[in-house]
Image (cartoon, rainbow, N blue to C red; front, side):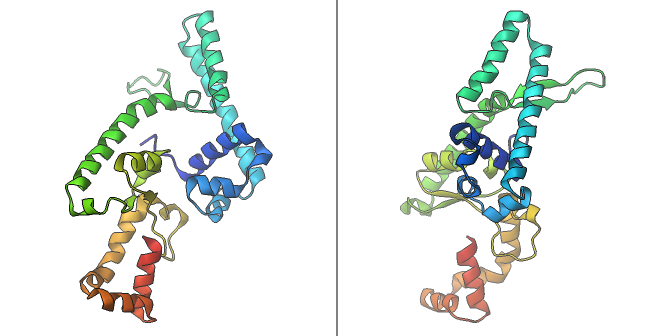
Length: 245
Protein backbone atom coordinates (compact mmCIF):
# COMPACT_ATOMS: atom_id res chain seq x y z
CA UNK A 1 0.00 0.00 0.00
CA UNK A 2 1.68 3.26 -1.14
CA UNK A 3 0.50 5.35 1.79
CA UNK A 4 1.92 2.97 4.39
CA UNK A 5 5.30 4.51 4.95
CA UNK A 6 8.42 2.56 5.85
CA UNK A 7 10.50 3.66 8.82
CA UNK A 8 13.08 5.80 6.95
CA UNK A 9 10.27 7.66 5.17
CA UNK A 10 8.47 8.34 8.44
CA UNK A 11 11.71 9.56 10.02
CA UNK A 12 12.27 11.94 7.13
CA UNK A 13 8.68 13.22 7.31
CA UNK A 14 9.01 14.08 11.00
CA UNK A 15 12.47 15.58 10.48
CA UNK A 16 11.15 17.77 7.67
CA UNK A 17 8.35 19.12 9.85
CA UNK A 18 10.82 19.83 12.66
CA UNK A 19 13.19 21.63 10.28
CA UNK A 20 10.33 23.80 9.04
CA UNK A 21 9.07 24.67 12.53
CA UNK A 22 12.28 24.72 14.63
CA UNK A 23 15.21 24.83 12.24
CA UNK A 24 17.81 22.08 11.76
CA UNK A 25 19.61 22.90 15.02
CA UNK A 26 16.38 23.12 16.97
CA UNK A 27 15.64 19.41 17.33
CA UNK A 28 17.43 16.20 18.24
CA UNK A 29 17.05 12.47 17.62
CA UNK A 30 15.16 12.31 20.91
CA UNK A 31 12.42 14.55 19.44
CA UNK A 32 12.06 12.30 16.38
CA UNK A 33 12.05 9.13 18.51
CA UNK A 34 9.30 10.55 20.73
CA UNK A 35 7.17 11.59 17.75
CA UNK A 36 7.43 8.14 16.14
CA UNK A 37 7.40 6.08 19.36
CA UNK A 38 10.66 4.34 18.43
CA UNK A 39 14.06 4.08 20.08
CA UNK A 40 17.00 6.33 19.20
CA UNK A 41 18.89 3.15 18.30
CA UNK A 42 16.36 2.54 15.53
CA UNK A 43 17.01 6.05 14.18
CA UNK A 44 20.77 5.45 14.19
CA UNK A 45 20.21 2.18 12.33
CA UNK A 46 18.70 4.07 9.39
CA UNK A 47 20.73 7.30 9.71
CA UNK A 48 24.05 7.02 11.52
CA UNK A 49 24.02 10.64 12.60
CA UNK A 50 22.13 13.89 12.23
CA UNK A 51 24.42 14.94 9.38
CA UNK A 52 23.43 11.83 7.41
CA UNK A 53 19.79 12.56 8.14
CA UNK A 54 20.16 16.16 6.96
CA UNK A 55 21.92 15.10 3.74
CA UNK A 56 19.18 12.58 2.92
CA UNK A 57 16.51 15.13 3.78
CA UNK A 58 17.98 17.67 1.35
CA UNK A 59 18.29 15.05 -1.39
CA UNK A 60 14.68 13.98 -0.91
CA UNK A 61 13.47 17.58 -0.87
CA UNK A 62 15.30 18.33 -4.12
CA UNK A 63 13.97 15.14 -5.74
CA UNK A 64 10.39 15.89 -4.71
CA UNK A 65 10.70 19.50 -5.84
CA UNK A 66 11.98 18.52 -9.29
CA UNK A 67 9.22 15.92 -9.58
CA UNK A 68 6.63 18.55 -8.68
CA UNK A 69 8.05 20.91 -11.32
CA UNK A 70 7.93 18.14 -13.93
CA UNK A 71 4.30 17.47 -13.01
CA UNK A 72 3.47 21.16 -13.45
CA UNK A 73 5.14 21.24 -16.87
CA UNK A 74 3.20 18.16 -17.95
CA UNK A 75 -0.22 19.07 -16.54
CA UNK A 76 -0.55 22.87 -16.48
CA UNK A 77 -2.94 24.22 -19.11
CA UNK A 78 -1.31 27.61 -19.61
CA UNK A 79 1.14 30.09 -18.07
CA UNK A 80 -1.44 31.30 -15.51
CA UNK A 81 -2.10 27.73 -14.39
CA UNK A 82 1.63 27.13 -14.09
CA UNK A 83 2.03 30.20 -11.90
CA UNK A 84 -0.85 29.09 -9.66
CA UNK A 85 0.69 25.66 -9.24
CA UNK A 86 4.11 27.13 -8.46
CA UNK A 87 2.54 29.27 -5.75
CA UNK A 88 0.76 26.22 -4.33
CA UNK A 89 4.11 24.45 -3.84
CA UNK A 90 5.49 27.25 -1.70
CA UNK A 91 2.18 27.81 0.01
CA UNK A 92 2.18 24.22 1.26
CA UNK A 93 5.66 24.76 2.74
CA UNK A 94 4.54 27.89 4.56
CA UNK A 95 1.55 25.98 5.91
CA UNK A 96 3.93 23.41 7.39
CA UNK A 97 2.83 20.38 5.35
CA UNK A 98 4.51 18.44 2.59
CA UNK A 99 1.62 16.31 1.35
CA UNK A 100 0.55 18.64 -1.47
CA UNK A 101 4.03 18.90 -2.98
CA UNK A 102 5.13 15.34 -2.28
CA UNK A 103 4.30 13.81 -5.65
CA UNK A 104 3.98 10.07 -6.25
CA UNK A 105 4.55 8.59 -9.68
CA UNK A 106 1.75 6.30 -10.89
CA UNK A 107 2.94 4.05 -13.74
CA UNK A 108 0.84 3.71 -16.84
CA UNK A 109 -1.42 0.65 -17.04
CA UNK A 110 -1.28 0.50 -20.83
CA UNK A 111 1.10 -1.62 -22.89
CA UNK A 112 2.65 1.46 -24.46
CA UNK A 113 6.00 2.03 -22.74
CA UNK A 114 6.16 5.48 -24.29
CA UNK A 115 3.16 6.72 -22.33
CA UNK A 116 4.44 8.94 -19.51
CA UNK A 117 3.50 8.18 -15.90
CA UNK A 118 0.92 10.25 -14.08
CA UNK A 119 1.74 12.15 -10.89
CA UNK A 120 -0.53 12.44 -7.89
CA UNK A 121 0.14 14.24 -4.62
CA UNK A 122 0.19 12.36 -1.35
CA UNK A 123 -2.58 14.69 -0.18
CA UNK A 124 -4.84 13.26 -2.89
CA UNK A 125 -4.23 9.75 -1.54
CA UNK A 126 -4.92 10.95 1.99
CA UNK A 127 -8.29 12.33 0.90
CA UNK A 128 -9.15 8.87 -0.45
CA UNK A 129 -7.71 6.73 2.34
CA UNK A 130 -8.73 8.74 5.43
CA UNK A 131 -12.52 8.24 5.07
CA UNK A 132 -11.98 4.48 4.65
CA UNK A 133 -9.79 4.33 7.76
CA UNK A 134 -12.36 6.30 9.75
CA UNK A 135 -15.08 3.89 8.59
CA UNK A 136 -13.05 0.86 9.71
CA UNK A 137 -12.31 2.42 13.11
CA UNK A 138 -15.99 3.22 13.62
CA UNK A 139 -16.85 -0.41 12.89
CA UNK A 140 -14.24 -1.52 15.44
CA UNK A 141 -15.69 0.90 17.98
CA UNK A 142 -19.18 -0.54 17.49
CA UNK A 143 -17.90 -4.12 17.81
CA UNK A 144 -16.06 -3.24 21.02
CA UNK A 145 -19.21 -1.62 22.42
CA UNK A 146 -21.10 -4.88 21.84
CA UNK A 147 -18.36 -7.04 23.37
CA UNK A 148 -17.48 -7.91 27.00
CA UNK A 149 -14.64 -5.37 26.78
CA UNK A 150 -17.17 -2.52 26.76
CA UNK A 151 -17.16 -2.57 30.57
CA UNK A 152 -13.54 -1.43 30.49
CA UNK A 153 -13.73 1.78 28.44
CA UNK A 154 -10.18 2.85 29.35
CA UNK A 155 -8.59 -0.42 28.28
CA UNK A 156 -5.82 0.21 25.78
CA UNK A 157 -6.22 -0.67 22.11
CA UNK A 158 -3.16 -1.96 20.28
CA UNK A 159 -2.76 -1.43 16.54
CA UNK A 160 -0.68 -3.89 14.52
CA UNK A 161 0.07 -4.59 10.89
CA UNK A 162 1.53 -2.46 8.14
CA UNK A 163 -1.55 -0.23 8.06
CA UNK A 164 -0.90 0.89 11.64
CA UNK A 165 2.09 2.85 10.32
CA UNK A 166 -0.15 5.35 8.54
CA UNK A 167 0.87 8.78 9.76
CA UNK A 168 -1.54 10.06 12.41
CA UNK A 169 -3.43 6.77 12.76
CA UNK A 170 -2.84 6.30 16.54
CA UNK A 171 -4.24 9.77 17.27
CA UNK A 172 -7.24 9.20 14.99
CA UNK A 173 -7.91 5.76 16.53
CA UNK A 174 -7.70 7.17 20.07
CA UNK A 175 -10.27 9.82 19.20
CA UNK A 176 -12.74 7.45 17.52
CA UNK A 177 -12.32 4.53 19.96
CA UNK A 178 -12.24 6.86 22.97
CA UNK A 179 -9.47 4.92 24.65
CA UNK A 180 -5.65 4.95 24.80
CA UNK A 181 -3.99 3.53 21.68
CA UNK A 182 -0.46 2.41 20.99
CA UNK A 183 1.37 0.63 18.18
CA UNK A 184 2.22 -3.03 18.86
CA UNK A 185 5.69 -4.32 18.02
CA UNK A 186 7.35 -7.75 18.50
CA UNK A 187 9.50 -6.65 21.44
CA UNK A 188 11.37 -9.10 23.63
CA UNK A 189 12.29 -11.54 20.85
CA UNK A 190 15.99 -11.93 20.23
CA UNK A 191 17.45 -12.63 16.81
CA UNK A 192 14.89 -10.74 14.74
CA UNK A 193 16.32 -8.70 11.85
CA UNK A 194 15.66 -4.98 11.99
CA UNK A 195 13.15 -5.26 9.13
CA UNK A 196 11.01 -7.65 11.23
CA UNK A 197 10.87 -5.51 14.38
CA UNK A 198 8.07 -3.27 13.14
CA UNK A 199 4.29 -3.41 13.62
CA UNK A 200 3.84 -5.37 10.38
CA UNK A 201 5.31 -8.46 12.10
CA UNK A 202 3.74 -8.02 15.55
CA UNK A 203 0.86 -10.46 15.01
CA UNK A 204 2.99 -13.11 13.29
CA UNK A 205 5.56 -12.97 16.09
CA UNK A 206 2.86 -13.13 18.74
CA UNK A 207 1.28 -16.19 17.14
CA UNK A 208 4.64 -17.96 17.20
CA UNK A 209 5.01 -17.32 20.91
CA UNK A 210 1.39 -17.78 21.99
CA UNK A 211 1.32 -21.62 21.99
CA UNK A 212 4.12 -21.57 24.56
CA UNK A 213 2.20 -19.27 26.90
CA UNK A 214 -1.50 -20.00 26.23
CA UNK A 215 -1.79 -22.35 29.21
CA UNK A 216 -0.95 -19.47 31.56
CA UNK A 217 -4.40 -18.01 30.90
CA UNK A 218 -6.03 -20.97 32.68
CA UNK A 219 -4.04 -20.74 35.90
CA UNK A 220 -5.64 -19.48 39.12
CA UNK A 221 -4.91 -15.70 39.20
CA UNK A 222 -2.89 -15.70 42.43
CA UNK A 223 -0.83 -18.65 41.24
CA UNK A 224 -0.29 -16.90 37.91
CA UNK A 225 0.97 -13.78 39.61
CA UNK A 226 3.40 -15.88 41.65
CA UNK A 227 4.68 -17.65 38.55
CA UNK A 228 5.12 -14.38 36.69
CA UNK A 229 7.23 -12.86 39.46
CA UNK A 230 9.43 -15.88 40.22
CA UNK A 231 12.67 -17.00 38.62
CA UNK A 232 11.69 -20.11 36.64
CA UNK A 233 10.82 -20.64 32.98
CA UNK A 234 7.18 -19.60 33.40
CA UNK A 235 8.26 -16.49 35.26
CA UNK A 236 10.49 -15.54 32.36
CA UNK A 237 7.58 -16.08 29.96
CA UNK A 238 5.39 -13.91 32.17
CA UNK A 239 7.95 -11.12 32.21
CA UNK A 240 8.22 -11.34 28.43
CA UNK A 241 4.45 -10.95 28.14
CA UNK A 242 4.42 -7.90 30.42
CA UNK A 243 7.31 -6.23 28.61
CA UNK A 244 6.18 -7.03 25.09
CA UNK A 245 2.46 -6.26 24.99
